[in-house]
Length: 424
Ligand code: PA5
Image (cartoon, protein in one colour):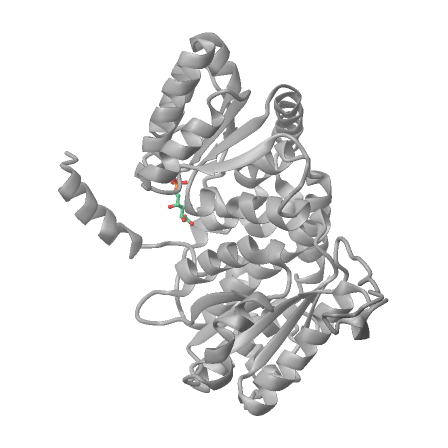
């Protein structure tokens, strides 16, 4: 479902020459002997997820779909990016599916927060507050506002029926609030970190409320699990991709630009940036993950890619079959001179733009291009893609002797912010 093409990547080393180190990293991951081994619950999750909780999640989601115009998803980082990526990739940007999903609790922007609160005031609202730690300030601040809003709008009892908390099974402030108020709760497993959690209730609950077939996501996940359980680099495209990242870094390419040609993949790129950036960017190591959406960004960043400093490589994340397509119409007068495209599909035009750009960046620009091709933007492909990137990320980090599953650097800003905010 996800293919890797390295023909345009100018690799100066043989991928197969990394087999021994990759096999060792694979064993560390699967046998839980590598760094951060308390957080590798996602590896076996496609087989071991809690089926009872999953059934309850679908039933609560169906109930919320019935009675609400809006689901407020209150979370940040790994507690929001995956769900947003899925909803946009699978449903598209202007889906008429109800309820509308609004992402909240991911910023201190007063303008954003106030505008959203105004927007939802006359709507039927439900809330899913998501936080593993239960103490993340952006989320806690937004949730206090939402909780008060819900209690004023519906009264305490009805508000409690409309608030769902996804958090640790036993600990944390959010768990305490949820238990006291009697909210429906879903568990974030102890052994799965935020940026690997889209495949747990963290992602699956809002995704189900968005009307997406979560069973198909789990099917895609299981397929990827089966396809990617063999460390053989000739068979495992995720591991081969992980190796390519290291080879390109050895060739002086410190920046990886994930490029998509589908507007609705923009948030997938944001999710991917968090996955790789927060996992790999440690101990002064790692590639800087960045992203672009072509052809839109060919009219901005494209200039740098073509002619700028040669620090980057592109990873194209291509979609074989678009969700929708349309034929370009003929025009009798042809004043715009566009009749040469009449009768062609718009997706064909997009694919030709991609081919021409690849040629330009590779041949004239000298920019290495890795190509990942995903079948389509379905729920099943989403599940497959998540697991593919999870495994690639873990292996590429282990190759650098880095713990992929912690984020010590994130604490530094928090410490300063708390001092300035006067938190005890
Ligand atoms: O990947 C991670 O672990 C982080 O990005 C977290 O998801 C993010 O900081 C939010 O944390 P929490 O769910 O504890 O509120």
